[in-house]
Each structure stands twice: as structure tokens, then as C-alpha cells.
Length: 74
Image (cartoon, rainbow, N blue to C red; front, side, top):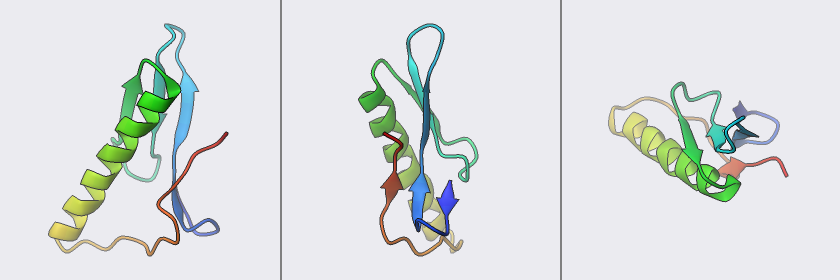
């Protein structure tokens, strides 16, 4: 989620019933990724989020100013 108070892109992560992890960025629709481990899911969703942000910049769309790029709950 793009959080004004954190000035970072928030990643939500949870474990599926089948053991896989899913990470998503709620404020970037469609930005979600699965991984066999928590770390893998986070890495994949971060890479996808960066591609989406870069695409928005390439097309002249605004993105928020960020003090840090990602926040991930512990």
C-alpha cells in the first residue's frame, strides 16, 4: 500500500493453505507474486512493483515521492 505516513510501498504477505507464500502491493492493482518461501515471494513482488512504477514513469503517470521504497511486516 502506498502509505503517506510511511512514504513507502507497503507489501502484504501471507501463507496460503498449500504452503506457498503470496505477497501483494494493495495500491498497485495486480501486483502480486507467489513464492515457495516468504523471502522469495517478497523479492518477486518487489521486482514486479519496480517494473510497474517504471512503466508508470515511462508513460508520464505520477507516482508518490517515497522516503523508502518498501515496508514489509515482520
